Length: 164
Image (cartoon, rainbow, N blue to C red; front, side, top):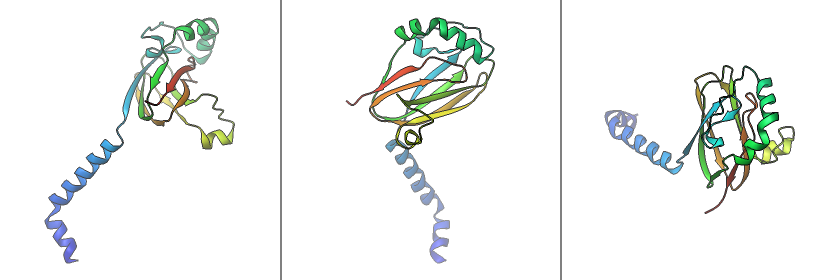
């Protein structure tokens, strides 16, 4: 009891030590932020900063647009190249009038395969309303990945993680 009273009297040094420990641990797990902007049927940065200004009111609109344009757009799309590590993908719904999401997964990932859920990397989420931004955290290891939005069907953009 006496020791606890001493800690209360010396609360500031205890809090300072906790704050220093928190700052130190955040440096140990530093994350890089990758910003992505979704507009109708696309991620702008993934298509070399070009917003195609697709008009979309539903998933069906994007499916029709992608059926006509996917191969040409993928051929010139930017492949995101990263090093292994922790990342935050900060995704913004710029002008799509319905909720969006984000899905990053190892290439070949099949959500129906229970072994893939245990052994492969996949991060996803929805609820990204008009004008909203959401962070998706993931630790990437070397390999090939794809990312997309199944709710605002985009292309499967490529991401490669390489050592050194």
